[in-house]
Amino acid sequence: MVDAYGIMQFVNAITEFVKGACAPSISPVWQREQHFNARSPLRITCTHNEYEQIPQNKSSSDNVDSGKMIRTTIFFSPQDIQALRNHMSSLGNFGRCSRFDLIAAYLWKCRTIALNPADPNEVVRLSAVTNARGKPGLNIPTGYYGNGFTSPVALSVARIMCTSPLSYAIQLIQNANAQQSEEYIKSVADLLVLNHSVGNQEEADLKMP
Image (cartoon, rainbow, N blue to C red; front, side, top):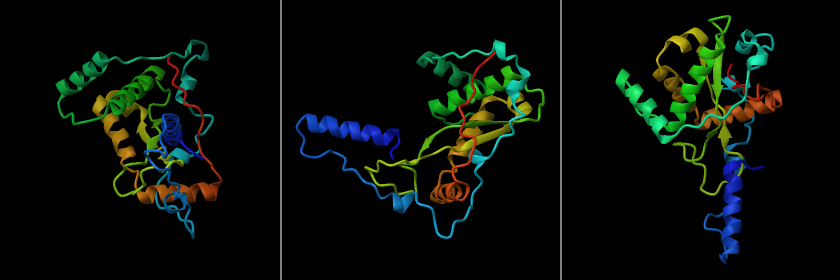
């Protein structure tokens, strides 16, 4: 079982063999049992909102006529991203953030405003796949090709998301991603064994009215 990073590692290795290499430049490493296996005894030591069951009768999209919902692709040019950064800088108190954090926060905030939840105290969430490779303290070896990701969740009350500056959403996303530690990953593994892959791993509904 591999993730996207592992698949690309495999494809690159095949490419190197085709070009005449005797061995891949990055040797494949498994060692899943050292990094991602569940512990004995099992113990949940972290909060895992990504696997929390969401009540089916409570959703911000219920406030929108489904006939007006559309699926679309949004492209952000370098100029668009710079415009967002300039906007954030003009508000002050804006630290460093990745392009992903910036765009994800922007879409999350805009989606929440557009859906206009009937209950302003509804909790809205954003989940994104985060690669554990290269994270301090995890010591995942170069060449590891198995699943090496988690899906931390950022949470906010809808009315606070709608009325707060974009930096608020960015900080929530950064805080969620910062949870990814060795203990967090071990806790995820234990939870999945205990609950047999429970969760809200359904397709994210990012349709806009």
